[in-house]
Amino acid sequence: MSQAISAEDPRPTTATTDAGTTRSVPRGVTVRPALSRAVHDRDGLRRREVHATLGHDPDIRVLVVTDEYLVPVLEAKGGPALDFREADAMDSDPQDWAYLGTHGGISYAMARGERDVRADQWMSLRDIGAEVSDLDAGLLVQAVGLAHWHDRSRHCTLCGAVTEVRDAGWVRHCPVDRSDIFPRTDPAMIVLVHDGGDRCVLGRQSVWPTDRFSVLAGFVEPGESAEQAVAREVFEEVRLTVTDIRYVTSQPWPLPQSLMLGFTARVDGDQALVVDQDELVEAAWFSRAEISNPDRIRPKLPPPVSIAYQLITDWLGESPAAAARS
Image 1 (cartoon, rainbow, N blue to C red):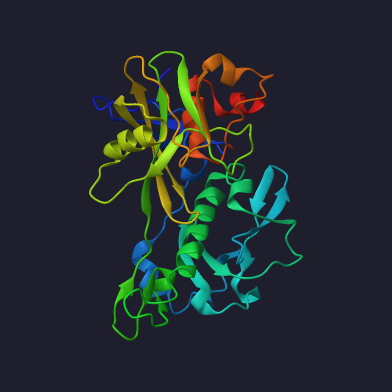
Image 2: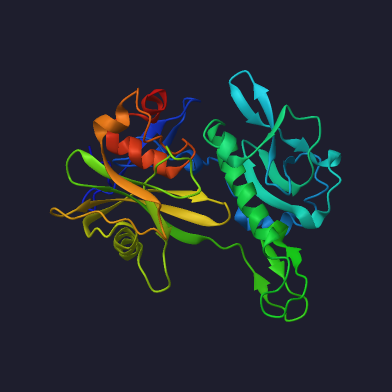
C-alpha cells in the first residue's frame, strides 16, 4: 500500500501521541519518523535576548552533549528519558552552550560536557532516538545537530580565524573579517523503489552487517531538485530508471547535518538491476512476504530511529510496532 503524499491531496491529518495529544501528520503517513516528533517551541526570536544569561539562568534545563555526541539518560518508569541538568550545576564554557527553546513554560539548552556518574547511562541518538518521548526526541536531535555544527565551525571558512559564539549558540562570528556562520543542513534524498506491485529494492553498504539492508539514498547535488536527485541516485546505484516519484515525509539526521527527504518511486517495465560496487556491495528485489516473514534471516531492517525504517514499514502496510515484532 503506497503511503505517498498525493499532490492532489496535501491536507494534513492528525495522529495521537503516547501522551494523548494530537499533532499534524501529512496525509498518507501513518506515523511521524522517530526524529521528526518535535513538540517544543524553538523560540528563535529570543536567541539574542537570552545569549548573555544562558549559562546563568537557574530555571533553564540543560542537556549535556559529550565530544562523542552522547547524552545522559535515565531509566524512567515509562521508558528511557533524557537527564536534563540545572544550569548552576554546569561548569562548561558559555561558548559551548546553545539555546534550544521552550515547552510548557520551561526553557531548554544544550551544553558540551563530559560523562559523569549521575546518569543511568550515556547513550547516542541512534540508541534512544526512537524510544524517548516526543519532547525529548525533538530536543535531542536539535542538540546533537548543533553540537556537530559547532565542532565543524570553530574556524572562519574565509580567513581561518577562531570564531566567536553569538545569538545563544546559533551564530559563529569571525572577529577578523566580520562574517557570520549559521547552522547548515544538507538536503539528502532517501527512496523506496518498488515495482508497483509486491516488490521493492533494498541495498547493503559494505560497512553494514551482511544481513542488514535498507532503501537507497544520496545527497542532493548543486542545481538539482530532490526529485532529480532520486532519479539520478537510483540509476547510479542500481541502474534502474524510475518514474512516479512521490514525496512521503522528512526527518532530520544530524550525523552530522542532513535533512532526509523521503520518497517512493516506481520502476517501469522489466529492467535489469545492476549494482554499482562503488555505491553498494549488494542490492536485490524483496517481496512483502520476504520482508514481513518473522523467521527471515535476511533482510534485517534498519533501526526504528531511521526514516528508512519508516518508508519500509509504511510500504509494507503495517505499523512500525508490528514490523519491529517481526
